[in-house]
Length: 247
Picture (cartoon, one colour):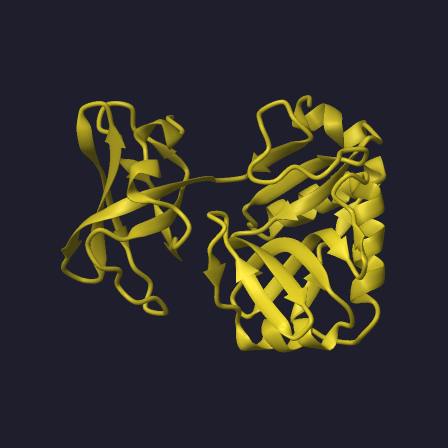
């Protein structure tokens, strides 16, 4: 798709914030409302998001990120009586804008999008200054593709920090846990992370999300790791050492 610097001046891709949450589909069909995770499994929705979904008229399927009690919607797969998957992203985004504009609610938020070069540059600088996770460039002419986009496809993620999914190996003293990742030699330790007081200490074997600056090549230890929470949509065998970004 190109390099991030070049994409800032190219009119074709738009720019959106990359949220630090859970990728979820929200499906409303009549009185039934379900959250669907990346594995295709039904998951619960925060009560404010559930009530906001119920308030929006018609049947639809939203794609977005669940963060706390908010849902950041960035795509619309189906609207009342029509399928949008074969439409361009620009058309789907306009349809999403119109759908969310039907009622006033605060829990399902339209993802802010920058289209012009100056808008993209301003948004990028603002998100960096606020220490956000990163941005996503999306081709405006692209059809909907389920799952994660392939490298060189219609989307490009640009992270300000590195992140990885790891498995809790041990629980240490003072709200700290040991982390491990999998490679061809088995499970490899990658250091420890402190669990903030606003999170429960995860059990051994749980998959957790970690933000860090880089990993040391000799030891694989993560430098300045920050605990982001548990992952319910990733299996242990997906927590591989090849995720790491080295110094």
